[in-house]
Image 1 (tube, rainbow, N blue to C red):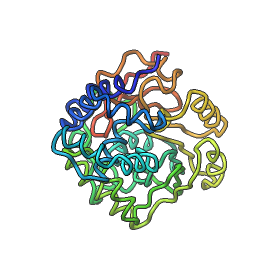
Image 2: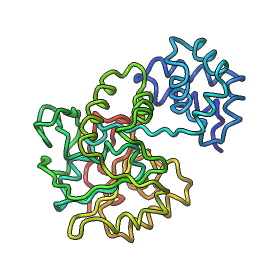
Image 3: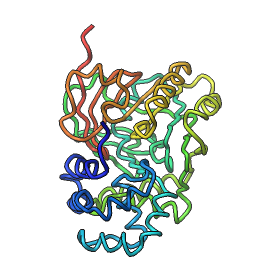
Image 4: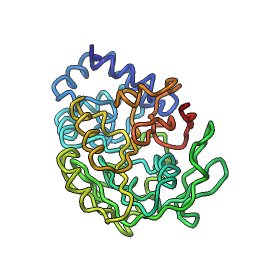
Length: 322
């Protein structure tokens, strides 16, 4: 049985916000016990009731609250503006640090690469070759990049120490592409960063500055409707890689199945970074469950690691016995 809105907020507070954002944890718990705000959310489509969307929309309209009473007043005093913002915006978190989990997998594939990200937002995760990386003190990637992504690792990686990657083509698909050169889009991206996470905000600003030098192409549309068309435009002879992070969970089960079937027909390399359970066939291959909120990183349906929600941590999984 699906969770009620109150249950979803309570779960989100304890699973995602706990230890990451004290303010968002308090706000989520407050909403869970607030009948008037639950009624406000009930007037929105189910897909528009998520905590991240409510909190970011309220901050965009009325600024960051100091506590739950101020947040509650902001929502109720600006009810129409907050609802309109939630209806017109999406939770398009574009965290470049997630590339640190992708990079070793990308480096293990035959080069050069043609990258196609679905749910690309502003395309910051389409630029893994423009970032530098630090894996427990070991550098990788573009070592002279102004943005270095630090990542703590656990377990033995099945991938060799990541070397350079060569990207000859890149494109994204998104229902509502964000433009790194547009002030309103950048403001929304910055508002999606949780209030206490200054390092994430600095990282986002650095990635936006890099992206503005040569913005990646992002095609507007439904990922299932446009996947084949955009994939056909990839540079011939390059290894086509279709990938995504925290995107397919927003699709119904039949949409996810249709996407997986399409990817299989493309004959590409497929990297998914989604919550456990989004793809049952991936979850069925897990030997254990993630210890905390995060994603399952999989290559062509085979789980290879557990990763953190906003990057910075990877726990590599042992190779399956044959």
